[in-house]
Amino acid sequence: MINAALVGIDFGKIDFAASLEELSLLAHSAGANPLVTLTGRRSSPDAKMFVGSGKAEELRLACEANDIELVIFNHALAPAQQRNLERALNRRVVDRTSLILDIFAQRARSHEGKLQVELAQLQYLSTRLIRAWTHLERQKGGIGLRGPGETQLETDRRLIGERIKALKIRLDKLRRQHGTQRRARNRNQTISVSLVGYTNAGKSTLFNALTKAQAFAADQLFATLDTTSRRVYLGGEAGQVVVSDTVGFIRELPHQLVAAFRATLEETIHADLLLHVVDASSAVRLDQIDQVNEVLRAIGADTIRQVLVFNKIDAVPELAARGEAVERDEYGNISRVFLSARTGQGLDALRAAIAEIATAEPLAGVPLDASQDDFAAHTRNDHKVPELGH
Image 1 (tube, rainbow, N blue to C red):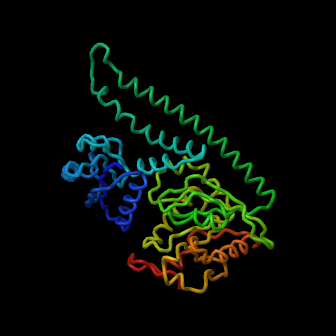
Image 2: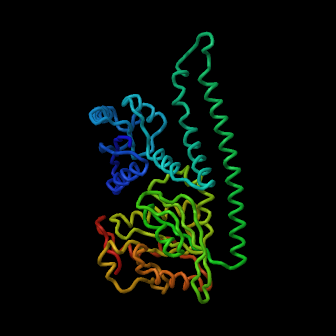
Image 3: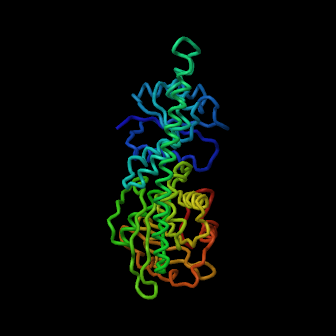
């Protein structure tokens, strides 16, 4: 594994500690070994090196003392900031966006997933091409030396632009194929259910428990990148529904990924019901709910009926001991389901809830925040670990 240093600057956000812990998990997922964590406080980023010259020198000394090969920032760095930091530290520097892209590149398995990751990487790289050619840009003249940097940059940008265009065409074709499959399901009046949620909330484990599938599930960030769909027979009037497992969301999800994974996220946009899976054992679950809802708004899925599914209750004794697995809002609509996908507790209640919603006429949308506003009001307490339920 590559020895790495993590850098996080606190700009006054309440989720700073959770975000830094998440960066450590991301680093491990990418194959890095975080040995040093450097933090600091600023009111705004330094224009030249993001952290300022003093903190950069402190970071350089820490890297030399601990044999650090890679420096990972918990922020999005401008190309110039990244370039200046690499010069000052004499080490490779990556930002949060680049780290997530690298994990996606490692985990993509399907043809479509690989295309989407490549598109996101090229879009990210296109803004950083100058890094490879600064030595040519500094050459002002001389026979045979005029303008080679500009020429190389223009060539690279053209080649990347052509590849991006080709990838978008192929992904558009795949999106149309998905559309044809969805229209076929609509003709058969098959209800579509998508599992959404924060990464590592247990969506794939729940998907396997519901569908008896063998989708890859692991206790790591972004274990699932490719959408997998299976039919589930619920019996009675509900009959069959199609359940889809989707890529997990994360705070500050790179916009390149949201755009590139549009084809995958289409399953979410066109679902009849969203099961928003939440890690009930997480101390920052409410913030994670907010982060997922932000992405759902960004992709236009904020009008779809949503039910919060609190997973991993086996890790929360007071929840595992409760007798009622389903909670309803003031109008009698199912709003929350409590279960453990690992042990199976509450799964029958979830199947019954899906069947009830699937047979309701019509399958009306519920605003994103409607299912958790009352919950949040009763559970937020100066950002301490919230108590679940009423």
